[in-house]
Amino acid sequence: MNTQLGHLQINVQAANLPFYKDLFAFLEWQTIVEMEGMLGVIDRNYTSLWFVGQAKAVQNDYDGPGVNHIAISVAAQAEIDTATTYLREQEMQLLFDTPQHRPDFAQGPDQTYYQVMFETPDRILFEIVYIGIKSV
Image (cartoon, rainbow, N blue to C red; front, side, top):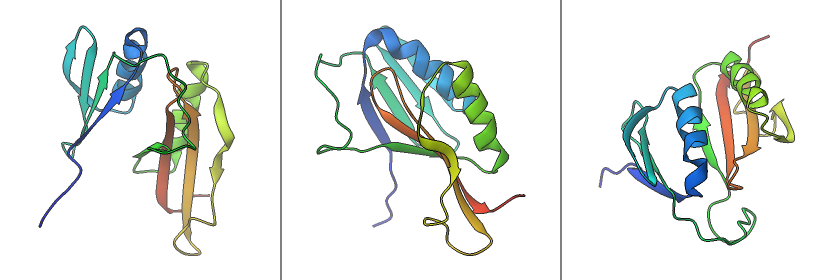
């Protein structure tokens, strides 16, 4: 079988849909559907995320059963710093002492795993990450 991830549906509060639209526009994903209660975005590999404004009023625990976080990869280390600036401008709280290099996740001595992590208004944990050659 030749498979790949096609899409994920993420239930959110409808009032937060503009947050996801702005975030993914910043990350250069294309909006493919925008209608009342729904936002669909797609990356250059045709993987799509669907934000559906129908979340029930329940507490999300990303350390419980289910998805822990969603990671979005970038192509250059400097893009993590750009994303960090964007997130701070949006008054997002950065989590786990990020941005930071994670040598424990790097795949070699000249490699880095450089990440920033944050929680969306719906308490969904996101990571923006660069994995590759470490820049000075």
